[in-house]
Image (tube, rainbow, N blue to C red):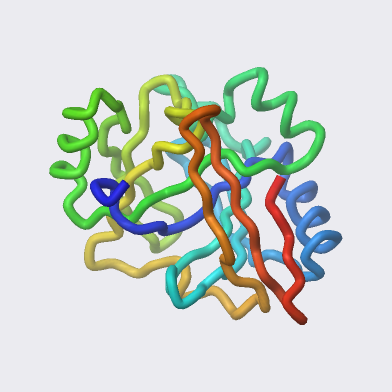
Length: 199
């Protein structure tokens, strides 16, 4: 899907950041770096570097509803976090929900997808601390094609989160999109060549 850009990061949903950190420590042996809050969406996150030669700025984002934030009223939260089925799934443990593609020309890429009958959503300005970006979000908050169609992101001339992330010892080994049945999967490679597939 060259019209969407290159992989920026993978999104793993979690019922809480404590759940996400416990999973990461148990399965990968590392603690993710605290990220921050997204006031626009009422969410917060933590991050893990996954840079590889094929995706030099890739990272894993664990995202959860922020219990201390107000829920957005004008739209639903991103990545399907308001969906009851997604919440039930995340209650069992963190899960790979979506991926985000870096798209330098977001309007042109959106238009190309819409010509294919796909709806990546509208560009929305978002921020977390000093980080600022534009990201495509559907009004219903749901990833399309089971998460196989990415959200599009444009960091502009600003900083990228990967610049603040220490090496984790893990890198993205394989990333696969499945249209039938719709979904996505990713495998990480870590110390001593250990492979872990994201749930």
